Image 1 (cartoon, rainbow, N blue to C red):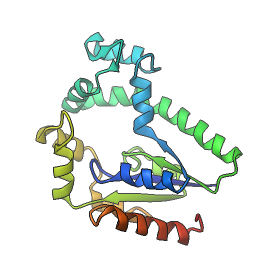
Image 2: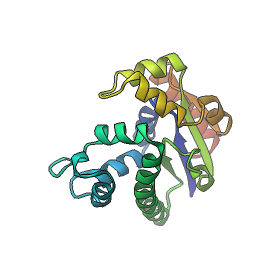
Image 3: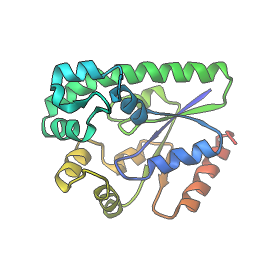
Image 4: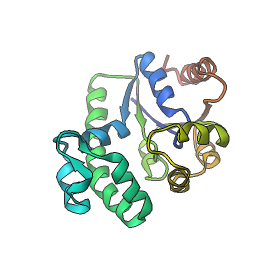
Amino acid sequence: MLIVGLTGSIATGKTAAAAMLRRLNFQVHDSDKAAHQLMGPGGRAVDDIISLFGSEVVNMASGVNRIRLGDIVFADPDKKVLLEQILHPLIREQKQRFIQHNRLQRRKAVFLDVPLLFETGGDRDCDRVITVWCPEFLQTARALRRRGMTEEKLSSIVNAQWPQLKKCQSSNLALPSSLGQAETFRRLKRWLRTEKLI
């Protein structure tokens, strides 16, 4: 079974590409979604987050306030590391269960949707990597439309990620998301055909 990493910097179109893969009946493990579940009501990471960051970042009805927590960790790199030490092992454990389950189902391939794939060394667990990218001006415009996003916060996030060009150069497929969804889908399917996955 082929393990394919799907990555891309913030607001470059990775979520849309993951949706295209699901439309083609591929299984996609979404590490962001896994993190949200871990920080949601009753999530396995909530107690550890309260211990480190205090109860003011948590509402028991809705779980961790990710915007408030994000403001804290992007202002303090040491706290970001502490949060990652809580979340990353739990996400890794969930990802391994996902891979094992799909291996037993004899799937041709699975996709791991991981924003910080290269930055965390996750690419070493992948047979292939797809990076979704778009021009910087478009990335900025898309990101600033997100709730709670500011130019300062965006700059902090982008600076914590590899440059888009470096990600593209380190990938098996650099998939542009700025040419319209139909073109992105066409290029993705062409690559999947060359890999004999469809």
